[in-house]
Structure formats: structure tokens, C-alpha cells
Image (cartoon, rainbow, N blue to C red):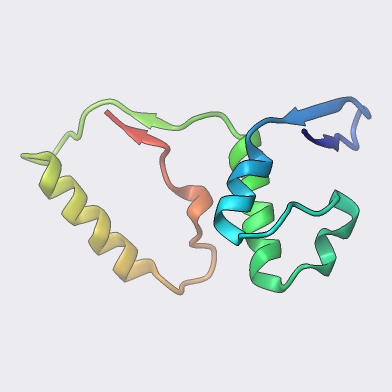
Length: 100
């Protein structure tokens, strides 16, 4: 199990599933936290994004108000991705976890 210490109060926080997800994406074993800086830049960013995703609460939307169908919602989402791709401060962390 992968563990990270919170600097503010030194309590141990366990991050479950993080190791498996990292291994599936990067196809490498998860390094110790102190060695993350040795990874290539892209893998460091994947690591940091996964840490944030694991710590943040789930972000959900119930319904797709304003869209006639799920397909039109998906189409609009793809358009946003295309428009925002490559822009500063646009990253996977801002995406919702689930639309129901």
C-alpha cells in the first residue's frame, strides 16, 4: 500500500488503488514518494494528477440540463476538450468524475 504523510499534522494517509492505477497507466512500478522527482516529466505529472484525484472528493452531476440527450452532452464535452486542449491551467483534474 502506498502511503503519504500530510505535512500539516503528520498524520498518515493511505491511498488505496493508487499503485495499481499508476502501474496500469505508466507500465512501471510506483516509486517511493521521495523518488518521484526521478521519473520523466510526463510520468511525474501523471503521478501528481493521480494523487490529487485520489485525495479530492468525487465530483458528480445528476442530469444533463440543457441537452436533449446524453449524446449531445458528450458531443459538447468533446468540443470543450478540443477548444481547451493545450491551454494553460486546463488538465484532467478539473473533469467531473461522473455524470448520471
